[in-house]
Length: 232
Image (tube, rainbow, N blue to C red; front, top):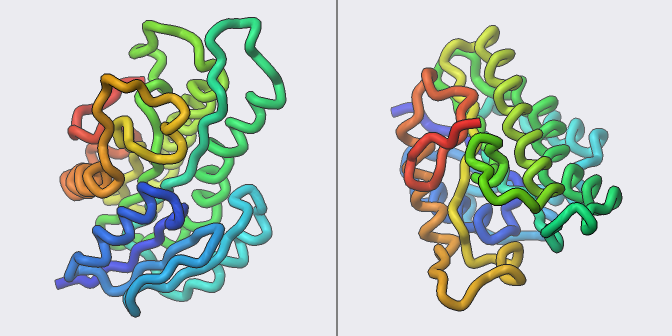
């Protein structure tokens, strides 16, 4: 059985932490390299690195060089949501840039320095948390200009990565993942009383299942927690 090396970014977040726990239980996994803004403690299978700024290109480059093994799976569970705009009058350039920096730039930088660390002779996977609201074809309500745009830009990056990685490894799989509405600090300010929210562990288990089912024909696509494709 092939042993897997996995890198998880955002391990101190609710979903990232739950994904770490899920893969920690997987007997196929040899090592998990986690990246977080604060120390997280797991068993000896997990090696934790502190990465306080996911926009800092120099630090991400340095972290990538610190890992000598090739990777099989890279997961990015990073993002934020600040008060979403309900109308045009709420648009603010600083807010827009903050959403791009939080939801798009980390995957851009991680992709630049960590995609080359994936094996090139077998199936490998790279997944980043996206959101259904990043879909242009699925947008019927409008609003949320900054958050929607940051996720749409993320989806475009993933498509670009998928096309380029195929040249190096035809078995590479690069996808976006929508975890559903999860009970986290990110969603807490916007939760409604009459709506049910996933626990982070449930969301992680569903995302794990989605990742497991993907094959090279799925690369460049976005999938929901229920394994349905979310179209651009």
